[in-house]
Image 1 (tube, rainbow, N blue to C red):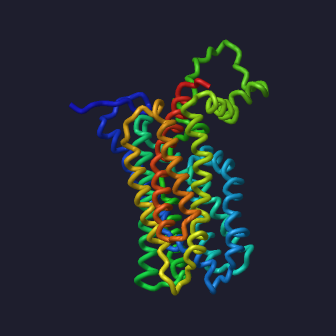
Image 2: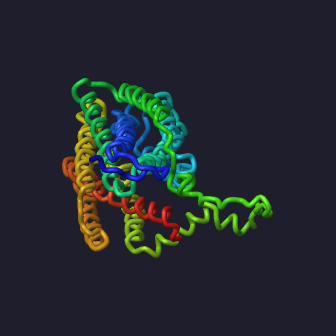
Image 3: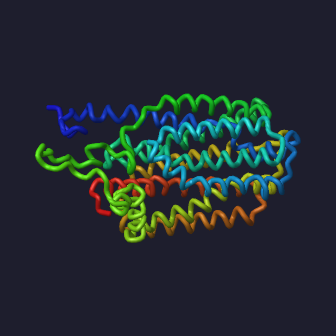
Amino acid sequence: MVELVSGQEGGLLPKTQESQRWRWPVALLCFYGFMVQLKPGEPFITPYLLSPEKNFTQEQVTNEINPVLSYSYMAVLVPVFLLTDFLRYKPVLVLQSLSHISIWLLLLLGTTLLQMQLMEFFYGITMAARVAYSSYIFSLVPSELYQRVAGYSRSAVLLGVFSSSVLGQLCVSLAGLSFRTLSSISLAFVSFSLLLAVSLPWPHRSMYFNMAKCEARPKLAPVNPGSPAPASACSPLSCFRSSMLFQMLKELRNVVRVPGLRLWCLWWIFNSTGYYLVLFYAHVLWNKVYPATENTKVYNGAVEAASTLLGAMTSFVASFVKIRWSLWSELVIGIITALQASLLFLMGTTDSIWACYIAYTLFRGFYQFLVPIAIWTWESFGFYISQNSLL
């Protein structure tokens, strides 16, 4: 006998059919997440900027180019987040791919400091648009699968970064390709990712602005022809209180009220800030400890590959970890954060490039273990609120 489950319209669907309905879109989205990370020139952007071809100084890269990424990411994060849900994810993924193309075009054709700063600005947009990818995949599955698909999607992205880093390192170490050639290859890959983004299916709902009609709108009572027509307008205050913006502001209040959600939000804010600062400036540190040129053995790609592979493994493991996070979250976060701090201290004090490489790899692995847990916690809470209207 085939087990039946409820369908969207209140009917019954075979469980196998229900499973197949979400597995194909999830697989397609995971493939997109893999392909969009294939940029073999990315681990070598800093050496490329410092090379004789671009001829920027280390002070310019550290103080005038890299900081633009942090500021632009902070400036566009909230608008992109709101547009992500309102536009139902896909347009934001297309915007992300267009920004990727702009990055590599500017790296290939740009020669001035302003052009490199503009390149970092587009990097900020691509980073802010990543929220569309993780949110998109949650709109395709029921809430009980959130933790599993969070691990799948995160692993696909990290495996894409791993493959990209391995390819870049092989091109530099074995094929002897220049940094400019790597940038051209990256441009070709991100152009293909744009085609994938355009071909992705439109999701039928989103978390706030585009919920399914059967969930977002109550059924209307039958109208008596002899009774007066209901008023179509509402007071400004009532309209505001029923708006999605007001509902999201009320949900923000719950971030403070719910201890578990508050903990993970604080972890995300502070740990992610430190994580991205390490990613932005690690290559500058490596270049200081071990100056890199196209004529020396540069292992940036290999280190990025190793750290990403470890992150993919820890992220995948996290999707199957079954512990009482409401009880053990503080202990786990505290231990992992302490280990990360120790690794950062090692990176900042050692003169060994290999110690920097190992510390960087472990630092990223610890961070990626907690990311799927944090995303799963937020999405589960958001789904519960949107379905039960407990705001």
